[in-house]
Amino acid sequence: MKRLFIAIKLVPNASILSVYNSLRKELSYNKIRWVEPTNFHLTLKFIGETQENKIPYIIDIIKNTIDSYGKIKLDVNKIGIFGSSYKPRIIWLGIAENKKIDNLANDMINNLDAAGFVKDTQNFVPHFTIGRITNIIDKKTFNHSIEKQRNVIFQKIEVKNIVLYESILSGKNTRYNEIYRFSLTKQITIT
Image 1 (tube, rainbow, N blue to C red):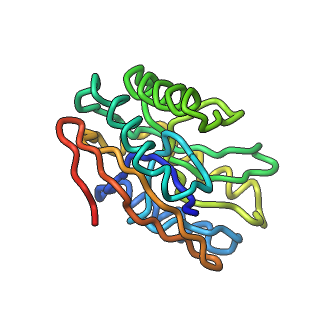
Image 2 (cartoon, rainbow, N blue to C red):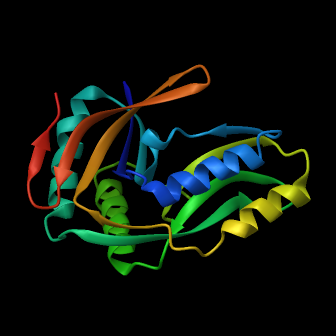
């Protein structure tokens, strides 16, 4: 069994790294598990525990889904939290409204659902998780640090690939292995 998800990888620029490092420093007294910048990704569909013999079938569904999509341009332009300001859970980077990415994610979710890979109960909210919160000591300072970074243009990216990842949980760390990379113009096998 492999724990699978489909995502867009973000290679952060200096602006995003600056915000990320600043937040890590300002919020260092809190219990936050920071995602390493090499692991920043926007999940299009979490599949979960999957038998390995179903991977070729998933690959075909993804290929057919992205067939009508070209490259996608995204503006990573905001920071936010999931949860409330009283009990935040996740720190994330968000994108400007983008119908193409919304349509791609919905097509992916619906096509996989039709093939027996059940839809999530939550709506698709495009984001890159940068921190998972365990405990905030001073919520006022935390919220102020997040608020300082809101609505700043961080990075414009052109999405050329979508990746089928395996998520490997090991203690506090999670590793992501590429199983297959889909070019929005041509497929590339990862070995």
